[in-house]
Amino acid sequence: MRPTGELRRRPWVQRGVRAALAAALAWQVAIMLPSPLADYAYYAPLGAVIAVHPTVADSASAAWRTVLAILLGFGLAVAVHELTLWLPGALTIALIVALAIALEQWPVLREHASWVSFAAVLMLTVGAEDPARYAAAYAGLTLLGAAIGVLVTTLLFPPLQLTAAQRRIDVTRALLAQHLRDIAAGLREGEMPTPDQWADRGRGLDVALDGMRAAERIVERARRANPRARHWGGSALRIREQSRALDRVAVLVDDLTTLVVEFQPHRRGIDRIDGGTGWVLADALDGLAGVVCTPYAVLDETGTDRRESAIATAEAALQRLTSLLRTSDVGDDEGFFALGAVSVGMHRSLDTLRSGALDLRAA
Image 1 (cartoon, rainbow, N blue to C red):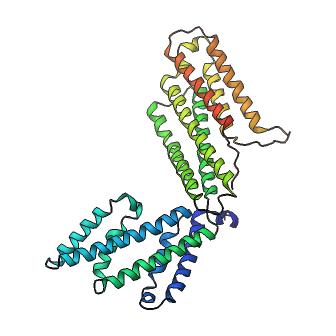
Image 2: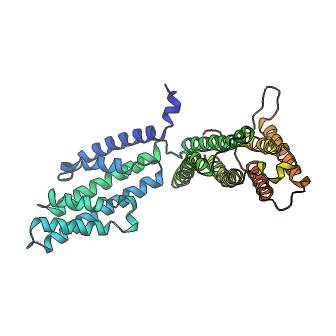
Image 3: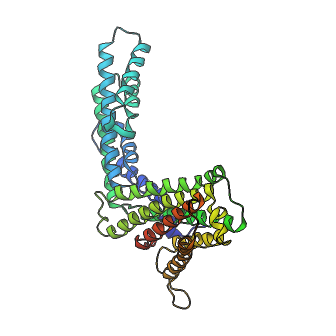
């Protein structure tokens, strides 16, 4: 069972609490309104739920875009219905739906565009007897509920999504390190995957990278109009720097591992100079994986900083690989050039990890 504190920080749990509270408040406010608004009180909780999103900025955006889409749908339905009284009902509905879907292509509505056709059909089926009254009640109460949803999102632990973003970063970091260790193990065992096999293995890392980038974007949106943004601004900044540093390293690692898999430089001309090329390269890859897995300073039992130790180990392994390249007299072998490119890629990766602000603990 998950600890209560950890569960409370889950985005879906926070959204559930906010949505439930916002819906209840919206209902209570709506039933106190004068008739005929109170007769449609159930639309207020709908607006509240629509407006409760992971970020304050997204909540406000959902509120006004949804209400705009509803009004467009109502207006379209009434206008077309009045202009086509002579048409059979089925043709009128078909025309309204077709025009509504055309309106939904308006970029301003974004993901809330489907409310146009929904509202248009709803007007025909429910509000046809008194369109003005129904439109005012539906759109007005939805807007009221949405405003309450935005207010609740703003005041009740307004999320910055730092924990979720950090979790995505940790998953990506672990997969990236495993990616490097798998290649290192293949070098030592002499069982390298084919390019196609390696591409299949890399799909999990690609998915994790996409999730990490999406989480970073959510954190950036969460800072807008958020009263907690100033307090947690430093943590949000470090989240961004972590994500982007890992993203850059992942690109570099993808390039260098592709070179190793495709050209297998440890089996080319340079290996005639030193039979241990594969092991030297494997040590360098393992060293880089160790730095990826140690994003912040941690002291071990002896008081040694594990991050600094990991960096030193990686630098020493890379130095051995660089020395091997510099002392080799292989001239035009493509494996030699591939190994040189791999070495450059690992140096750049290590520099990025060393300078990146990868020191954020779960917030």
